[in-house]
Image 1 (tube, rainbow, N blue to C red):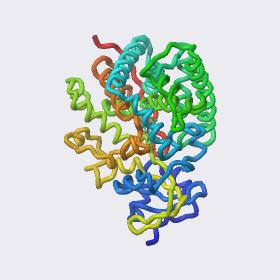
Image 2: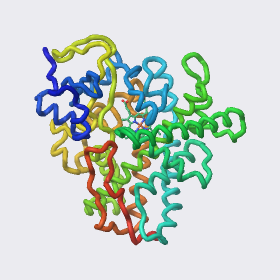
Image 3: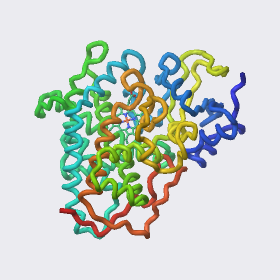
Length: 416
Ligand code: HEM
């Protein structure tokens, strides 16, 4: 069967003017969950829906090696990191990340998060206003370094937080945004590379059960230590995504502002509702738009031919807003998660499938713990006004996106 084709010579401009809903909209127009197009001059198969997530995470049919564009490796991921490897090598590297996510490690992460919000917020009471997103990135940079065992001088917090944020901001960026991300990667790899070397040389106190220890002492499939560059890329893959949680926190603050009834519910301290609210923030607001992989060998799926070497994109944002999977998907409704059965393929803000065997994010529980500690702090310990002179709209064309004003807060006081 012939795969539906998106008309036009190349859809790059279309993607850049539509943004997050690009795959879902094209699929609706073509009445198909799969279509073929050209992006940046390259043939690409775009897919949406739960069945397509299943397919995408079939490691016999898709690989990551050779699939991740260089521009993403030079900014967001780094080169030769976990995102670009497959098979046994990937499995062993993945266990290294998963081994960090123990209950005691996650509890420590939660406690550090609360402590760092408290310390930073003390300074806000003297300020006319603060921009929540910028503050959250800084707070989470401290959290990430403390949790991972990476030394961070007070004088460098701002610039390190800026660089870790710039790696994320570069994902859909061309021109200056891409260049900024590339320079931020160079600076961050130099910094973390030298920290790894110092740790290995014994120039720093040994900190077992931390990311720096685990990564610096990790042995690969051949029993070798990771070289300094790869070790730094992997340690940055802990620090950067922790800082990335600042986006979910900013979206969550927007939800608290837009839905005061939910804020009241959270103030009552119901842990179950905190869980539902957190999951709905991860589903509803746009963060990861798509993910890419490459066909490992020719195969047929639902009558369509997939040819070896073809690039595919799975529609992460679209699956989280698929009307076949979610009632009124464009409504913010935490209650939808009550009694919803866990499914590895329909709720995919951080990828799908089993994280142990595939590329799904190993940091989902860590993300949830950071978000919960942060929301709890915002509702229980902080009083603030949200001035209506700011622009809180979310531009779905920019990737990654945020409320335009990055959430300004005024008249801040600490609740006793
Ligand atoms: C992978 C999203 C937080 C560590 C991923 C993937 C996504 C994602 C979409 C790719 C899945 C795939 O390729 O199939 C997010 C988002 C986060 C977040 C939106 C929160 C804002 C975290 C945290 C950590 C983490 C807190 C660690 C502390 C990783 C690593 C990978 C990954 C190491 C690579 C996994 C692999 O290739 O096997 N994440 N993540 N992430 N994430 Fe996260």
